[in-house]
Structures are given as C-alpha cells and as structure tokens.
Length: 485
Ligand code: GLN
Image (cartoon, rainbow, N blue to C red):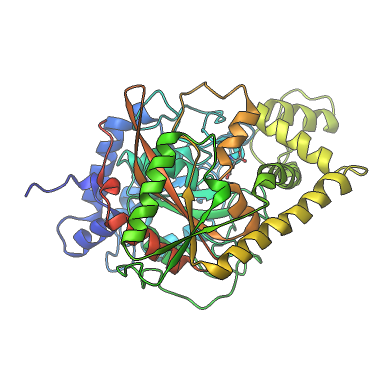
C-alpha cells in the first residue's frame, strides 16, 4: 500500500508515527512547511509563521508527551508570546504578544509546537473571513468561495492539509460553521470547559476556544490537553479531569438523538437538508433512537445574540484606544483626538457597526428595552435546551443552512451574513457543547462543496458528544475526502 504523504496525516497518526520513530518532529515540520509553501499561496490561511523558532522546538521535542512534536496552527486572536496577535485588525498592527494564552501554555506542556498565525474575520466578527483587514482566505474546495468564519483560516488550513490541527474561537458559530464549510471537524466546548485567558475577548459570556481537526478522535485528544480549570479565567470550571476519548468506538445503541423541528425548515439549501437527513438515518442504523423535539425560542436567537454580543464587544473593545496596544494615529491634536483617530483608522466597518450597536443597546434609556430584555430571552433559549436534553442525549441538525458561498456575494448585506449563524448561535447563548462533522457534499456550479452535520450536547457532556460524532464519522467516508489543490 502506498504510504500517505506526511502532511496529510491526522494528528493521532502523526503522533503514533513520531513515537514509533518513523520520522522525527523536525521532518514532520519541514514536510508541513513544504506543503504550506506549495498550496497556501492559493488558500491564504496563514498570516505568518516563525519557522526558525518552530524548528528549534521540533529539534528538542519530547515525542513521549501527549502531543510531543506536533505543530498546531493558531487563530490570530490567541496570544503566543513573541508573535504578532492582530485579530486581523489594523488597530493591532505592530503588536507583539507579551505572554502565552493558557491554551498555548497547555499545548506546550503537552509537547505541541504552536506554529503559525491564522487569518480570521477582524476581532472574530463575521462568517466568511472577508472582514479580515489583512488578506483573503479561500475555501480549499473552491477557491472563489469563502471558507466560512470567523475562524476561516483555522478551517481552511486543516482542510488543505497545511496544518495537522488548529485552534479557533467560537462566539456564535465561528468554529462549527467554517469547519462545516471546509469539510473538517470543529468542536465548540461547553462554556467554562476551556480557559480563555489570552484570547482577545469578543463577547465574554459566549466565547470559547476549541480545536479544528481532521477526525473526531483528534478533537477528543486536543480537548484532553486544552480543558480544565485555570485560575486566570474565573469562568473556567473546576471539574474532575476526564479522558474525552473514553467513549470512542462505542455504537449508538440506547442513545436518543433529537431532531429540533426549528432546524429543519423551509429555506435551507435542499442539498444540505438531504445530506443531514441521510446522516440522521445513518445514526439510526447505528442504533440511535431518533425523536422529534422542539426548541420554541429558536427564532429569537439571532436577534438576542446581536444585542448581547455587540454589547459585550463594545465594552471589550474599549481597551483598543491607540495608547496601550498596537497602532496609534499620527500627528494628533490632543488625547481625545488620539482616541478618536486611532479607533476610526484602526477598526474596520463591521467592527465599528458592532461597537455602535453595542453602545446603543447599553445606553441609559435603551438598556432595559434591549440588553435586559435580550438577557431574559436568553434564559428562555437556555431552558429550551434544558428541556430538550431531559429526553435526549444530543441534538442532531445542520451546522449551516447553506454551503460555502462566493466571495463578495454577501459582503454588502450584513443582515444576510448574520443569518449564516442561525443554527450555531443558540448553543453559545445556552452554553452547551457542539461539534460539526463532515456529512457529504453538495454540487453547486460545478463545485463540490462540503456539508456539515451539527451535534449539540448537554453542557459538560463532551465525551458523549464525541462518542456520537465518532460513531457517525467512522461509519461514513466523508472525513477521508480531500480537496485537490
Ligand atoms: N458570525 C458570528 C458573528 O459574526 C459569530 C462569530 C464568532 O463566533 N466569533 O458574530
């Protein structure tokens, strides 16, 4: 049998090969870099890479550690000491991270090598990576199409075999939606599972960091390293350590999966609907019992999200004032002028739109009508999930109502762009975990575009969620397909 190219290995396969001494961590890194040099000019996933530093780390890697010698690519919103961290914004041009985020510290302790900065929508605001102020990222399956967002770079590099795995962040779908559109696995852990210390905050009550991988097993292995209480993030929970791979390999007998009727509606791309329904039948054939459920407040999720997320963003982004980090406007008249000009020049249009919206919904006189009300509806959305999970082990539905669209098709229609997240946002509002796994392809204009299946689990029930995703994945061919680049 012909051996697969080194760069196409899954993280688990790479690890075993490194441990078996089939090649060294340095050889793996160099082979990855060669792949990046050959295809990333088309894909545009990477913003930068510090190859010298990574090679030094690879040369001294301890492959007996859980992720020993494995390079992991990082979304440009997570701080890695000594490297740029710009959130793809002009306002952070010239900024160099002064510390490692907790997830980076954990990756290093497990022997991994954080390697490369990945493109994204500015400050993680967007669904197509078109809001990056730095460069364009393409979908590896069809280069004229978007990779999804906001972690578009993180998804594209895994799909293009230019990373073994990557990290992204998910505030309203930014891990699951690009994973679906690029045909890889994207996990949003439960709120509180993974420390956000060192993540540039977008909406603090929603943000979670999670992995992009080629397989579900890889996702579980990365979560083993990333999860856990961190004294530097008080929202991270102190739960007993667990092995998220422990249920992998079990079938679905005795499990109940709920199909939320609000997620199978008119208006979904018919090819997406068909692929997801076929996936539901596949889970049934693996032993799961399928039941219909309802999440009655789903229709309010997008509206509630755009009030809460923008409110929190307007507060979080106040720190970018031209004084403390990154770029500062030149020739200013006074302090006020420095703030105004640095922010006006530094933030892109979508970021400004959100800061203005968020400031408005928090302003006195409107706070009760918008922000407070949104919080109440958020509680109703959370209760929908709690009620549904009383009767089922997980929910099964599409990740995105559509496949990857063409660049430029939506960029002038923010509302249409916001609707890309109708199936992912509620899980952030409720805090539960979710994963997207490849479940087929749609043919559109001669392109073959990946479709994602979303599984949503109870909060802190990742092991079960990964079991279900793994059983489905292993019984289907989709995760083995690769784009031709
Ligand atoms: N697309 C959503 C937004 O624009 C979600 C982004 C995210 O999860 N970071 O806010």
